[in-house]
Image (cartoon, rainbow, N blue to C red):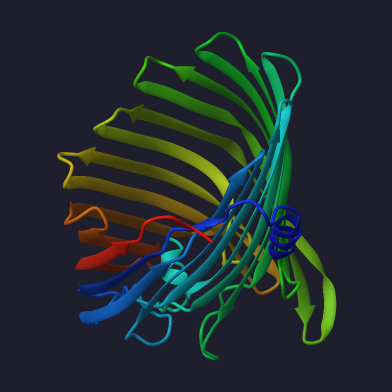
Length: 388
């Protein structure tokens, strides 16, 4: 991705680039930021926040590079209050017939940021490399086709005595065909193929699914998007006796997948709610079947005050692998994260953000749970955009 930016930069060096720095400081308190199931410890932390987005936008080319992070007084990655660093990049090229875009991400943060993934009740450092691309082409005034592909590699830095989360790579690709039935209605057909491989070479999942989608603009404010279909995943584990490879055993995950999103958008109030079921890569050895419910709302009371609510609940059913066979049961993880935010725009550039959060997690069998409540205050300086 950096190579793409360099090539385009040399070609359009005379065109303006811009940057909009965002710097801040945060103070937070949490009752159990490590989500310990027993003997929870409360913690207070202070941290520096930064986001340095660089943009180029002209002549059908849009480029975006955004380093962001949190540097706190906490150590390690076993807590929700851990440091993090993200480097996001995007390049989009558009013309009269369609568009092509490429996205990339490099990230280092705690596994607890990713829906509470941990092993033996502890969070660990999670390193992520992600690249995705999509190509969209208009076939007629009403029809278009889109091809998507993504590649992800995730590794965990774990203590020697931890029950291992599994380092993995995941490749997925598939086409989408969309046909506008009217000004308000669009019909879609979606297909995809995915391959999950643990980096130790022991476990693997191969999945495929086919879905039918429908998008409806209900009125000027409300819209509904739905997809539903069937998926199949073949999970395979290699079996060893000491250094000797004995063979492989397999099991299937078959069933329905779906997603529905309801959106309301107005000048003062916006709302997005959704439900979904899908196969997702995790650090537990295979693709897992995940059910999710999400809600996001924002309300601008005045020019100085605005409020937001974000809530997510999900349940992951992870196939169990043990010894020389795949078991018929699953390991379940349930995770919720609710956050209330109030933003006071002190001036045009200074923002004071106040957050209240509640995070819970339950996993098993046997059933074990942990929860944390917290509050935080962020003081952020949004600098004006200026050309480079």
